[in-house]
Amino acid sequence: MRKQKIYLLIFIVVLTALIPSVTVSAGADNSVRIQVNGDTVSNQGRVIDGKVYVPVDSLYNSLDLSADWNQSSNTVYLRSQTDSVADIVKKVSPSVVGIIGKIKQESPEWDENSDNIVFGSGVIYKAEGYIITNAHVVTDMDKIVVVLSNGKSYLARLKAIDEKSDLALIKIDKGGLTPAVFGDINKMSVGDTVVAIGTPLSFSLRNTATKGIISGINRPLDGEYRFIQSDVAINGGNSGGPLVNMYGQVIGINSVKYSGYGVEGMSFSIPSDTVKYIVGQFEKYGRVRRPYLGADFSEGVAATYGLPSDEGLSITAIADGSPAQKANLQVEDIVTAINGAKVTTIVEYYELLKKYLPGDTVSLTVDRDDKTIKVKVTFDEEK
Image 1 (cartoon, rainbow, N blue to C red):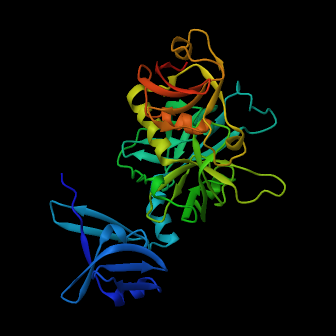
Image 2 (cartoon, helix red, strand yellow):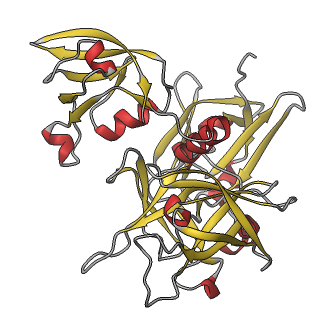
Image 3 (cartoon, rainbow, N blue to C red):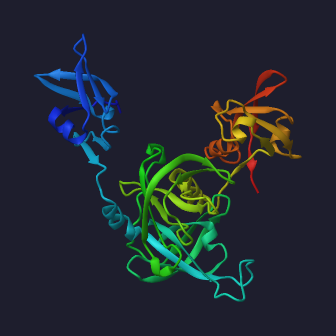
């Protein structure tokens, strides 16, 4: 379908009411430049019959709008990010559940001096009773009980679990639920307002809401995938609950909080794209099928300290019989790209692997002995 440029009639008085600093100026060639808060957002304005027309897609980010074009109905839908936190909580709460259960006696977490009751949160994924939560919430939980926002409780079954991503899928025998809407983390920015909803500290505090901002998008922790960092208050029991943007969309599943003397406001959530990837694998295969190369890597010095880097990943070890060995990769080879996509950190490497399955063949760009070569390798399946 041919992409069309959509123009929106802009009245200067309306713009000024929305954003205090809007400047419209005409160039020598009668082109119209639009500035919002001093930043040029479009040079493609047109003056027709004394009115200014501007492409919608050049304005909606600056005006905090979302825009959708429905060609069949010939309609542009604009939505303003003006919902209050109260509106967001009201909208999302029916999709948030509490999870409670008792630790299995064979679990290392079992404590004979405790009631061994643990709890967490979850997000309704499908109306037929499918719920996403953290793996660490349910991995050692006996008789998983899900409590809906209306207070009704149901026994749940563990359908799939992946400890590497810290995600699990459980199901209750209850239909007609309200599934959450998942948003695109790539449309979020540092400083955007977010809300966490969950069950902190006590099950009597179900559906507690806290507000903060996104502090970072691509944060590496001790895992294979990136995290969202925020300063939203997250406490024990919030695990598995949603991190929500101001459109009421789930952009992350709350997972980790840093705590300790002098540490404040450092909470981490699994981004929605990773959630969709893992749950998609659950639905297709009942587990996560990860491609396996069989090489260990080390990052460059800059990347190790979290600094921008152009260095690739150095191979430090190769497993016998692995795809890496079969492809004649060598220790001290430096892998700089996978199918042309640049890779400088181990997290970037695993993020790129989300595109592939066991059995897929890729081309690795490798620096070896001051030469750049291409090496084709076919992934096995990670065990």
